[in-house]
Length: 361
Image 1 (cartoon, rainbow, N blue to C red):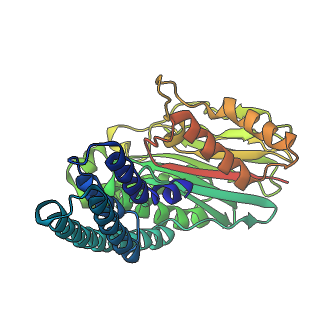
Image 2: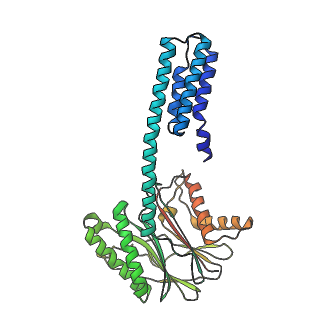
Image 3: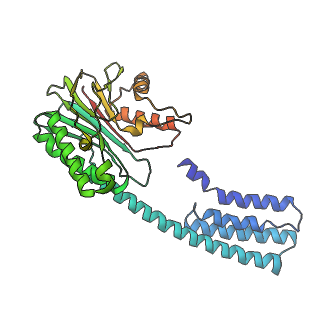
């Protein structure tokens, strides 16, 4: 925002520069070409009135300088004035074109935001005693819908969670995300245990791949982390299907990576063979926060190619927040994590990021 405000002074700075150059150069050297650049520079920066004002100011400045140098005539005076007028009109037309494009971009972003909220609604901030926060960071500002997903659901079997990353991009990935979410919402209530829930997700993905056919049928898959909290929140049961393992932060801010006891492939690959569905149980003590994310976080790299390590950075971020007197809530933890990933990559987001934080008070 500050940069935008400063940029609006560029056209006026061009005019000032033109005046200085005209005064320090011989009279046979004109600054008219530089003054003509001022309305053009104003086209993407100022409003319609601002562009007209800059154009009029440039014409007035040129006339004064030409009279001062004694060079105001048909060739170097009137002709330059007419050229400045034409350039100002051209700048107005450019501005109108840019405004139309920006309006279309804003409409597209609004539609994308509405579609994302429909496809990937934000989880409730609280289910029983469990505090919840979720964030979605698209790799491209214009593309607010991607292949990453999260869902939290209160079921007869306890609170169940899924964080996943669908292979591919675009509408095909969104279609697979919808299939995953629909299957989870149904199976999370019906399945007696996590293996049953994962099996239902597997079948849904295979059906979706069969409908799409082609490469998506052969290579479509979803890395997924499926978790279930005990009724008293004393433990969390996790099934990891090729997904980055979550991080558990205890009340003191110490981080533990919840690695799976047995590696398993992503969902949607049962056509290549059969695998067991190991369920790992981890304690979830009071004050603990479970932080889940997609590979947009774990595969974020700095200029040297070093990958981001959330398990190392999270304790530092949380302790820093505690030192300044603000205990970190789930939403604050995700905010700090996203900011830190951005600093690590120098602001170059390489992949979508879906993040979920679940806290036991």
